[in-house]
Length: 521
Image 1 (cartoon, one colour):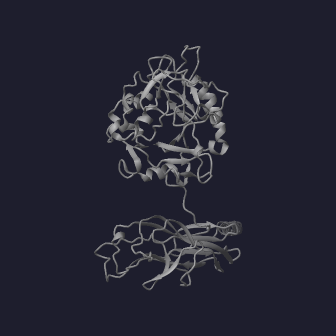
Image 2 (cartoon, rainbow, N blue to C red):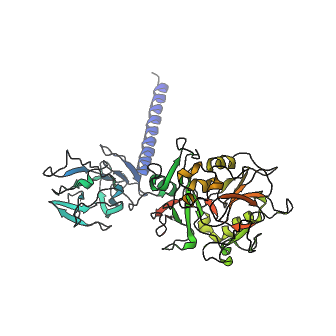
Image 3 (tube, rainbow, N blue to C red):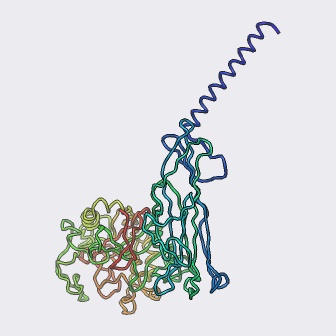
């Protein structure tokens, strides 16, 4: 080999060595920035801190117990289940030193275990041991520490929700390879009291054991999901699932409240407790992930304003109905508005909702502004169906189909998009108990129907739906509970209707009038 060739080989080797050194330097820098990776069996989600340290959580197994006469009876002993969640802290290779804190606790989503004794002796006990094997006897969220039959721990009989047991629990390490691992022990015990505990034989528990960097909270629950979760079978909790199998239903896969007085109240427009009457609404149903609300009671002039095309005459129609009749209410108590007084179309008004100043001014300006920005942000823009039908002598299903087809008068549009609208006749029809769904809506004045229809108010009320055969007729309810069409320039009572956005979260409440559903704002 010539000297020149040897020189080239040496230069090539040196060049490769330089590249290797550079690569190692870059690799070391990148490794330090991203933080080290675990080297043994611990699995879970790793989080890199700003200093380059890595903290990894492994939640362990879900705890569950299933008692039966075979495995739980007098003398059989307790039922237990155990899991060992872990947390590991690995220091950055730049410092080989790290410290931080974390939280340990539980989330209980469902718990139907209950006390079977008169003195409420704890039956479901959670024993929590930290990484040192120390039994924790106090919790951040004040769980009761008990001892029953030699079992020590926190009484979680019947509890649901999130509970932080240890907060700001310290962990430190001087290792950038294996780090420091904390292994906890959570043991769930169904205590055998050697008494009759058959009440818990079919009890269910859905619980998650959690170690994490931040305080443990319950995950957000969407209002739509919460309401759908109340559905079990048709009629339970007042809910009906309108799939293709529901006789005479809408077949839209929506969930509707029906019957005399379901627990479907919502507090909207305020966070006051108790909820003021003027802020009570009711759930018509859940459709495509959105909850549809209607004002629970009449709407006052103060809510709708007086600068629209409103009507305040002491009108009494040919059937002797006063537009303002409801118990002891006076004319000043309740708003009666002309649906669309547009006399350029007809001397009796127009059933074109898009040109209605009652729609554009009183509902979607005055009432919209009355709600305020915080609550406006919870309401979804909605495409309202403006299809009609020729006769009031039709069932809820016939109206549902008519509202959504092209049966309109002349050049009237078939849809309109805005936030605030009114009820559909089909909404009212399906709010009655299912036996009524085969009855035409002009026959809904039967006491057996009005007493089993939560939407019946005893008021003359407008719906949003036009009569498709005549330009000035709109469908409305009368004080007796049945549906008729009437002239659009007449003033009747109104209850605003709107859809909540699909991401609106449930905050609490059982849905009864004194404890309505509340929302996260």
